[in-house]
Image (cartoon, rainbow, N blue to C red):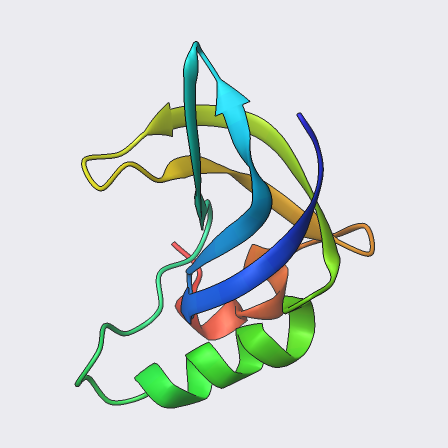
Amino acid sequence: MAEFTVSEVIDGDTFKVKHGWKWDNKTGDTVRPTGYNTPEKNERGYEEAKGRLSNLILNKTVNIKNAQTIDDYGRLVADVYYRGKNLADCFPEYKI
C-alpha cells in the first residue's frame, strides 16, 4: 500500500494513522497488523504490549503492505513493517 504515520496506539495490536487509508473503495484510519494477537484490555500483559507498540511506532512511519480485509470493527487488516521489520516479529510471544 504505502507509508503512514502512526497517530495513536489503541492497544498492542491496533493503531491509527494520520490522514487515513483507502483500500478496496473503503477508507478509515485504524489498522490491525497481521501475525500476532496481544492481550485485550483488563487482561494480563495488555499494558505492557500497548506500551511496547507505542514506544516502537507512535508518531513514526510504518509501511502497510498486503492488505487482506477490513474486519468487523472497521480496521484494515494488513502486514505492517517498521524499519523493514514485520511488527509480528517484534512480539514473538504473541505470534499466531
